[in-house]
Length: 194
Image 1 (cartoon, rainbow, N blue to C red):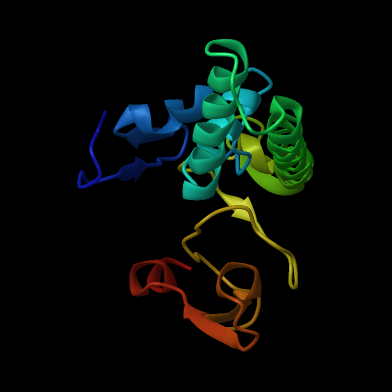
Image 2: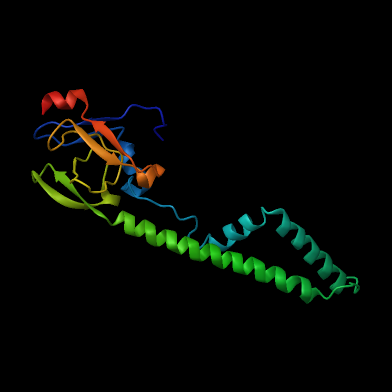
């Protein structure tokens, strides 16, 4: 791993291949460092992780202890004041219901992640010297993106140029809930080049 404190550089020169330093930054997430994944589970980890999270609750540990005690009393020493079905049935129902709720919520997260990752942005292709469509999940560090007015954008970006001035106004409502627009200026080094 390249750590969190290392310097990142993007080198672009006319006619040369784009270089990103450290090179491993674009190898994250299987070569898709901009791919969003908010889902908690995979198909194999859903049930074990859901049960693990449920037994973090003290009440579920308590009812597990009661269920084991009633089962032990019913089948091992053949004495229990309560029928084991009256304790085990509701407990398993609650665990199953919560696990299914977790699965439903996670399937919605998978759907929302896919929808977000499949959105399209215009990306500059230096070899073709033209703009091309690219999915948000395929955006790499160092890519030059063309963002239209009022268009959502897929990553943290450095503003290189604006249509009319050196400033752009962005909405961060999806990040922090604030509805007021925030002014972002073209860095001085890029303002002088343009």
